[in-house]
Length: 191
Image (cartoon, rainbow, N blue to C red; front, side):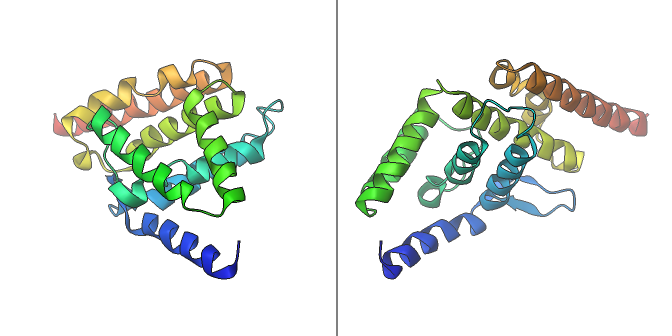
């Protein structure tokens, strides 16, 4: 890959800094896709001792690239994303990936295939962290920014993705406890 090709790739990825998600931060600022990807990569790094059998650097790579398709489609919340949206995003991502230098294209294609197949511990861990970070972020955002659907989603989302790991299941239970506490504090404040 030459420096010009490298810059073109980095310029494309920069779009994720301006691609906003449906969630806000604790300070009420709308979160970017890049911020979400950064935090799940950090979460993976922090869990290296909890998952000694997993190649954490591979998980981190998955976390960093998992939403690159949103450079082309924008973010569509999981609870609104249709199969047609997923297919369009995958096609645009594949088209872009195939346009990259051959070695990099092969690396990314293999990584995305592994992520989609959900057969390796690394792919399962990345997927769980992606979903868990979303509910963590909702818990950190002010309740008045939540839609009614998000109130339900925060109680149910990501349990299935975490189920392969006792540690992640326990984390999901802690996140649920935070959600219920947050909702209860709102109920008490309104009484």
